[in-house]
Image 1 (cartoon, one colour):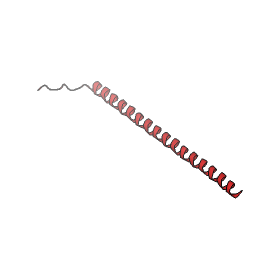
Image 2 (cartoon, one colour):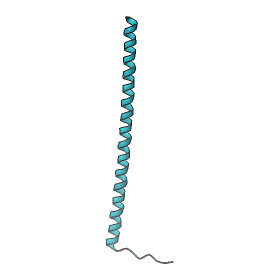
Image 3 (cartoon, one colour):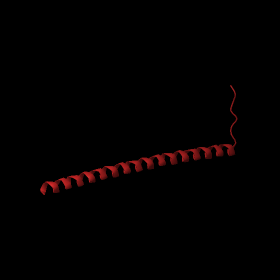
Image 4 (cartoon, one colour):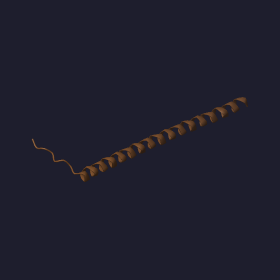
Length: 68
């Protein structure tokens, strides 16, 4: 079995920097996914509110026609 040569401090530090950068990139990607999901949920909620508003208008018109 071959023994691994220990890394010098500069190489170890460089590997740690690369790992931290990868973690930061992953975190940024996860934050972007969360933002996009939140935006999609907001748009869905806006659509529901708009649909209820139009139904309300139709029922108001129906009530006015019935009262006439």
